Length: 326
Ligand code: NAD
Ligand code: SER
Image (cartoon, rainbow, N blue to C red; front, top):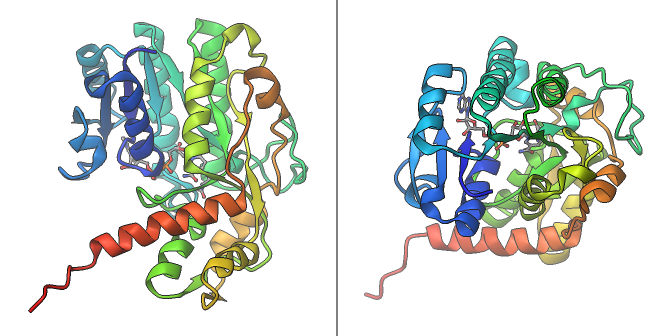
């Protein structure tokens, strides 16, 4: 990989992926794009080239590709699960229409594509623990419908047209650089900011819903390692199960209380997001990713909580107005 273009670069994953890519390839080799301008201070804008791009607009996409000449496009633009349930028609248009435009551009221009799928590609009929790599997928959310169809579309373009399309099924992602974009696992980020700022958090999922989770440095490494993997070793191409830890809100709260003993956790269950969470797997079987490209997570629950609390505390202290000596 020499030159990359990232769609949805202002989002939770894109912000950190762009930073990692620029560190490896050089600032000007990575074009960050998004539907919205996140402002001059945002790392995707401040650290190198940034252009507006709506992935549902194939003409502007073609222009950006011709301008930048990427050999890999990381396609992150999407609407997440909770937003997708509120705006299902938009989720279909952006998640599938946008992906189709990217794959068509890849077919014509010859670049490789990374597209994340999700635990949301599974549904209530899927074996939840462990969830095999290849199994029943009957999701009950529009987001999940677009993820299953997107996995198949990527496989189709690889088999039919030879497009080098690859991807993983991310679990819920925990990070501190950019806020999450409206998913069912957003509580696992919000909890840290609330713990540091207010000492308490009210969770929108019940105390005992266990879901797969991953810390962002592992998620970024998964994307980069998969795109670097020897294609000869890949039996699957898209939608590799990956996971790092399985956590309930109560377990997360207890792990935070080990460092912040006064932290208090309450619950106000949102029935929409609760139903989504209950339809998702508890633990993905990631043995195909381990065997085919050497996937290995580095952050478990305690390492994640330790680093998140340190980083969020630093960020909160930095944002407080400095006290001036009188
Ligand atoms: P996010 O919501 O934080 O960011 C998505 C970005 O896409 C936003 O900056 C938004 O402005 C942009 N966008 C929306 N519509 C667009 C359009 N039409 N054209 C261009 N940009 C548009 O999402 P994220 O968490 O960074 O997720 C990125 C990808 O990873 C998505 O495909 C998502 O489904 C997948 N994923 C994320 C998680 C997670 O926990 N964050 C888990 C599993 C899979
Ligand atoms: N974290 C994502 C969501 O909750 C999973 O894809 O939507």
